[in-house]
Image 1 (cartoon, rainbow, N blue to C red):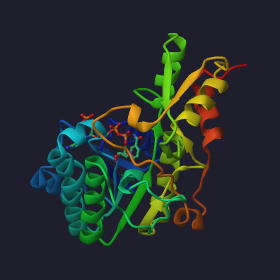
Image 2 (cartoon, helix red, strand yellow):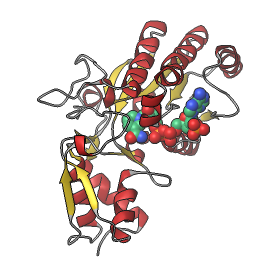
Image 3 (cartoon, rainbow, N blue to C red):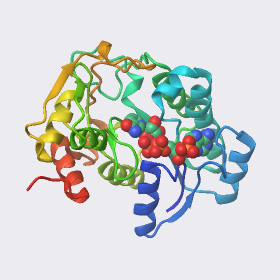
Image 4 (cartoon, rainbow, N blue to C red):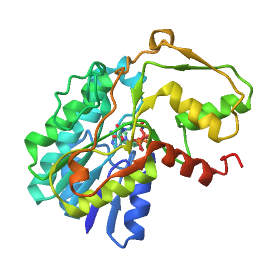
Length: 284
Ligand SMILES: NC(=O)c1ccc[n+]([C@@H]2O[C@H](COP(=O)([O-])OP(=O)(O)OC[C@H]3O[C@@H](n4cnc5c(N)ncnc54)[C@H](OP(=O)(O)O)[C@@H]3O)[C@@H](O)[C@H]2O)c1
């Protein structure tokens, strides 16, 4: 398969490049500063030059608080730039797999969100990802909307490492109880995206590790597995954790559509265990 991968230096993008290259696919990796996706003419020329079968598009401005402070910039990068890719891809007959977020939902549900539950973003990051979804759906019939949540990846910043760093430094830990979603392991997600794209069926998918929990329960599980069972965590509510972006409270998702194609991710606790083992952080 001939594929372009955007955001190729990012957490998910770099893993997709690694896995697809290892599997013998023809991979063209792109990121800033070489190609800015908000430049339609440059994007169009790039896609026409490479004529891919699929474009895997995880590139995004992922700083949710930055997006809250500059919402127009967020909508441009995460939203309208996805429209640039979708339109140019349609001209060469390429499909686009766009990585979106559980933050397109408002978090006021009583049960996990299904693929076709109504989106109603409550913050500028969620809105920008929703604009990206819409730009793609209306512009290119060969599309996959792949929503995920709470990614943790090897290298770089992630929630697991932040919690463990604080525990190791003996800093007091305060973690929110009323924010709920699906912790998702970057390596599992990359594998599942590749399987979906190989199948090639257009649609909207929720790719998350199975099960869900609060931020507090996520932190507690990580500390216990890494041997910090006696480290206390103060339980706080989201209103006590002031930040520019307001996350949806209850936004876990169900995987129905991908599961129908036998694409499922394992339970989140098993994913965390594998992550910790690979990092050499699992308690003996
Ligand atoms: N991380 C999560 O918890 C999470 C949760 C749900 C959904 N998602 C979605 O999953 C996807 C992958 O997330 P990630 O954590 O792997 O992201 P990431 O590590 O932040 O990588 C995103 C990449 O996109 C690049 N990029 C930003 N603006 C660009 C532009 N205008 N043109 C070209 N490239 C640009 C970034 O470059 P710079 O670094 O130079 O800006 C970066 O290399 C994103 O679409 C995100 O919205 C993430």
